Each structure stands twice: as C-alpha cells, then as structure tokens.
Image (cartoon, rainbow, N blue to C red; front, side, top):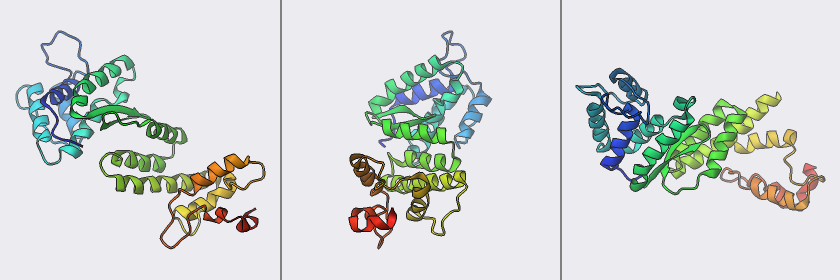
Length: 253
C-alpha cells in the first residue's frame, strides 16, 4: 500500500475520530469524543496517545507522526477501519454512510477506499472488486465458527499486502471449515489434520463426491474442478485426482 497518506486524508481521519472541534456548531460527521475518549480509542488501536493541550490538534499531530513513521502501513489501516466501525453506528446507519463518504473522498486520491466486508470495514486499494471476499466474510458470520472467522479475517487482511500469507490463511480457512463441520456433526477428527485429511473426513457425510449418480454430469464436472483446487502436500496427489481416473471411481462409490 502506498504510504504516507495526504494531509487531506489525515485531516479526514481526525475529523471522524474526534467528531470535530468543540466550538464547531455543525453536527459531527463521526462521533464526538472527548480527550479521554480519543485516548481510549487510540489505545484500542494499540497506539500510545495522550492529549497535550487541545484534543484535535494533538490527535492530528499523532496521526501525522504515524503517517510518516516506518509502521504506517500496519498502524494506519487499523485506525481508519476502527474509525468507521459499523458497530458504532447501529442506531444511525445514515451517519455511517456519511463517515464512509467523508473518508473515501480523500482516501481515493491516495489510492485507497474503505469497503464493508461482512460486518467489518477494510481499507483496500481503490477500485478493487471485493464482492467475493465480502460474501465469504458474510458466510463466516452466518456459520458463526470462531476459528473460521479468525482465519478468514487473516486472509482478508493479508490479501492486499501479503498474498503469500493470504494463501496460507485461506488454506487454514478450509481446514477450519472442515474441522468445524466435523465437530458440529459429532464426527471424530482424522489422525491427519491437514487439508487432505480433513476434506476426506467431511466429503462422505456431506456427499461431496462428484461421481454421485444423482448429480447432473455438468454439475459434477464443475464440482470436480473446484475440489481439485484444494492444496495438496508435496509428493501427494491433488485432492480430487482420485476422481480424475475413471478406473478409480468404483473404489469410492
């Protein structure tokens, strides 16, 4: 991600966190926070901050220092996402929309934008299509498996900055889904708890075999392609290779 941000974006972030100056007669776009509440907000973002004099100038100075620091890429996204946390606006959803508009008007000039993925806000590169990721985030909330949600959060957080870690986290997500399903079904966990072992344990109770007689061949082919995308360990066949050879089908019917 390209940092530092522009001064306009820094000011917009400060506006949302602080709610504006105390003498400002216009309604705040964000949430009006006193000095101690701003300090509490920043501590929740793992940033040591103390108001020194006026609360808004102190906050702006802190954000400028973070913006110019070597950890800006790790710290600022966390602050920006927290400032637009939808849970703070459950009683005023229209204000949350105004917060996103206010931040994105400046952030887009810096190549970023805030997007909601499931119940979380994410700072991503402007113009990135994250509809699939948002849908996955929503599904993890519906399933309500804590481990799945944590692994998916890690994959989403790394998708823009560390693709290799995102792939690793995505693999962990698949493992977590399979493990959680087995627990929910009351099935024992396999001795080998990698992607292959866990997938093999859930495919029978879930009826995932693409050679089932009651599935249209066109659909089975699509399923086969999806299942073949699951990662395989070095020296092992891909997960779905057993279905690639028709001669092996009889063993798995």
